[in-house]
Image 1 (cartoon, rainbow, N blue to C red):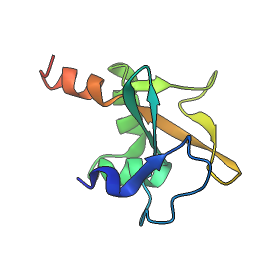
Image 2 (image 1 turned 90 degrees about the vertical axis):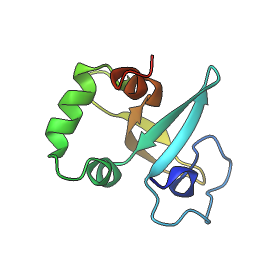
Image 3 (image 1 turned 90 degrees about the horizontal axis):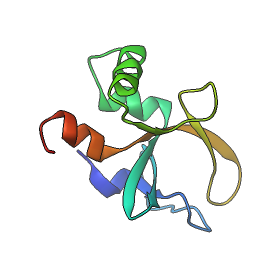
Length: 101
């Protein structure tokens, strides 16, 4: 819904202060954009569904592109310092499930 207005590049050296109501970050891997959602934004993106149900569905359809061992999220260093965990979403896999591929 908000596109790039709520995401910035996780590989940036400095934080992007122009992002209001940040939903997360994105990273480019092998020419593909992956979206890194924080917990609150994943819940917001799937409004009306419980977060656990959404995560189970993402796992079922292999939409979570990266995870740390034994977890559903992946830890990342943030631009400007610090680190946190994100749900890494491959949007191409969502398109495939809707019949896009």
